[in-house]
Length: 257
Image (cartoon, rainbow, N blue to C red):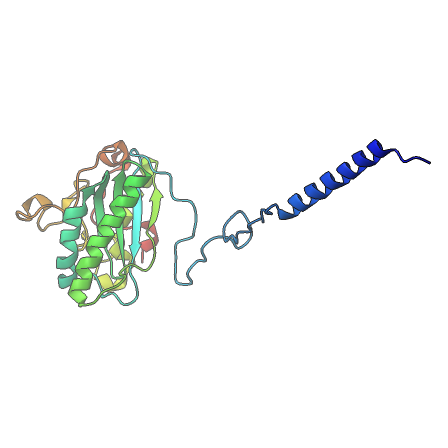
């Protein structure tokens, strides 16, 4: 039988082309998949672990509006000295004077306890709240560290903030912050009914007392700048007064003894 030479040549050419493609494919670089380790995401145990000493839950920050007063709490680290002393007060007072109104954040009232600080504030938004509290915290920390002759963290955890949105709640908040020392027997505060204002607070600059208990008012306290600013929000200026001015003999409900 005479071989079909053209057909044989075509078959040979096909085999050679297939061999070339196979060799070329073998030389092609292979893109390897990169697998990244992840610590986040919506899964059980995701996120930064909570410190065993922290009292602030890891939740979404409070919704901030310039219309709503905000209750801010700062807690001290265990090594920090008692804040209710004359020398600590002299260190902390300038921090409030400088940081009382910055970045759209305003300190309206405050009280300083042994291990924590309560602040009634206003903020133009979440960023203003964060920057304002951070700036005030840094100023307080620097002055306390200078007083104690040390370096390092002064506050035990991130700040806690809560927005207050009704006139009744705002009145309760002002009473709670300005008379917070009545919660603690070591403060020397008298029993309910007896007029008293906390010297480690902004009580002397507060214009909502039903009667003045005595002592220097903020306007008579000398040339130093006040550590608070007048409120701008309706709730802090007018709204809360609908439920009555605060008597200096009044105490927060849960502080009665």
